[in-house]
Length: 104
Image 1 (cartoon, rainbow, N blue to C red):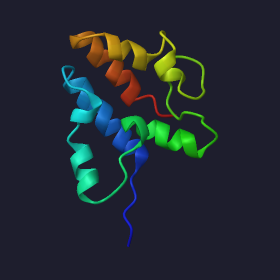
Image 2 (image 1 turned 90 degrees about the horizontal axis):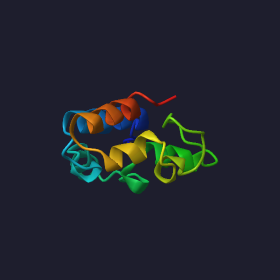
Image 3 (image 1 turned 45 degrees about the horizontal axis):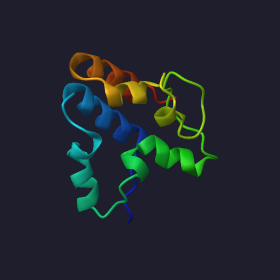
């Protein structure tokens, strides 16, 4: 039996953890070690939403606070992801929470 990832749960786990650990980066999430341990694929860009988006015509399943579309989260300075990248502390936690809860 091949194990499959629940991308939405993994997304929520990753970003929930980042909200609690604003000094950490995506690659620090302990869940990636578990995924790797079971020989499952680590998602593209360390992003479960990107992994799903590529499978469905590059439409992201997460509301990043900007228009839908491919890699808009990283390229739009108004996106929650971009703001998460450039902020620190409590503000960074708030953006991580928005991303964690943004799966449509």
